[in-house]
Amino acid sequence: MNINELMPFAVLVPLIAAPICALLPGRILPWLTAFFAAASSLAIMSGVLPEAVDAPIRYAFGNWMPPIGIEFRVDAVNAFIGLLVSLMATVILPWARISVNQEIPERQGLFYALFLLAFSGLMGITMTGDAFNLFVFLEISSLSTYALVAMGRSKTAPLSAFRYLIMGTLGATFYLIGVGLLYIMTGTLNMVDLAERIPEVADTRAVQAGFAFIVVGIGVKLALFPLHRWLPGAYANAPSAITVFLASTATKVAVYALLRLVFTVFGVSFATAMPYAEVFMVLGLFGILLPSLWAIEQTNMKRLLAYSSVAQVAYIILGISLLSVTGLASGLVHLFNHAVIKAALFMCVCTVIYQTGSARISAFHGLGREMPLTMIAFVLAGLGLIGVPLTAGFISKWMLIQAAIEQDLWLAVVVILIGSLMAVIYVGKVAEAAWVRSPPEGREPVKEAPIGLLLPMYLLVAATYYFGIDTRLTLDIAMAGARVLIGAGP
Amino acid sequence: MEWLGFYNYWIVVVLMMIGFYAVISRGNMAKKIIGLNLFQTSAFIMFISAGKVLGGSTPIYREGIELYSNPLPHVLILTAIVVGIATTAVGLALAVRVHENLGSIEDDLLSEDDSDDETST
Image 1 (cartoon, chains in turn cyan, red):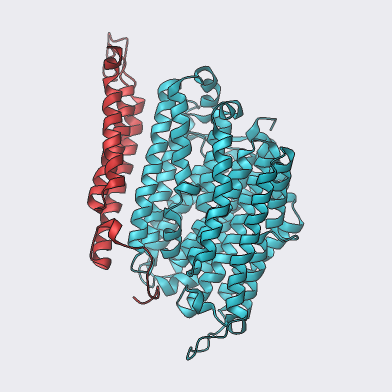
Image 2 (tube, rainbow over the protein chains, first blue to last red):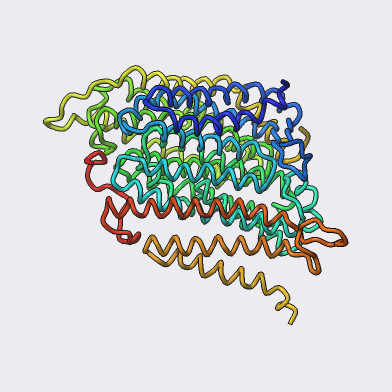
């Protein structure tokens, strides 16, 4: 079996494992199945990535040759994202086992089945080369995510899930309408085929409307700044394991879908003809400043990090609005780095929730002495979020600043720096609560978290620093991916 | 009166706006779901009506027929209808859970923020 035939199994293994998981009794068996599925996806993707950087890997389903049949088409960009998603799932699952045992004690088979469905949906969005197939995978992952969010312990979790469902379905239907308009104009759904046929009809109102529908639809999914309303509630009320998983993968995959459609399908010349760069630039700048400001105000730690996620997505949007190789590469690198950093931060906060039962900032008072390892991990990962040198966050912000300077956008540079200063404030707020404030009167002493929660957390913290020093994996592949997207060679 | 020839798209636009408006303006979760259904249906009609070829026959292979309508949009929309039903089912199930937990399904009267501790339940 060569790598071309193995590649679709990165999606198929979790998809097939999901119903098996739902049938398995107890706690260990479903978890083992889920972990095995995620790990095999990771193994396949790590084999695919080096090959895909050289030339795209294609697989036609049912031997129906594209454009008639559906194909998976993996190049440097989606191999990179696919590796990220499967890596995060594999790292998060061992951590999730402990927190899920506490939060969802019964019927864990169903929980892991939904987790695998969400995971395979995200992988499918990443791999597919067909615009309609992307919609199907988008809905597979979204529907299972709504159910997962509703499984949170908080009473308001179903409400958050409902609001997410309304926004998410509107977004997906917008995408469907956009794809419909493109299909009417070109008669194809295959992305490569679409890219060939769109230039002929690029000047029509229908294709331009299709572009707008697709960008807005996916904008909802990636929590593009004014469309982000669903995100803080969904992240705050979801079970801990799901918050960590969503924060590190769901919005990232949506960003990938946007990149793929805007750059590969429509092409840079189409995007420059539309007011795409200007709109995204403005949304990116406001999206960095306002959500950072809201993050500072939050007293619920999960919400604080959720708003910070919205701001971090805006950095990526700013990078890709520059329409240059450096800008796109900075977006892709930040996508990877932010996924790692934010997963580490959410793991720290959720570990505190595991031990104290509260996400309020008041629960963090004095924890620096009682849970030193968790809080040190938080500060170390927080430095990455701020973008201190030697961390992964520094690499991506440095790239972004370089890309902005290339085009003399000094305002963007100033905004990036202000955004980083605001990150100092909200990370500092937690550090202050942990070390400066004393624990509230009469609180039972809090014990340090079990080793099973600390290990994956420190693995991600170590990755934050590793990718800040050795950038071969992230930066080089991101540059290759950016060149593929912009259309300058493989 | 050329625009009348595209009456299918006018129906799509009108349905889409009614559905979209209902989702945004109504606070009641059941009404939101109805609006969402209308909105999705309008997208389905757009796909299906675009598959009609003028003078084309139903896409079933028969002797003596040269021109067929395009069957692909129908197939796509079958998938999308299944997705729509699943969304409606999940949405309604969530509305039931919201009513059990919070005693109301008026979205704009409810707050997502658990005012006291998250684990009080």
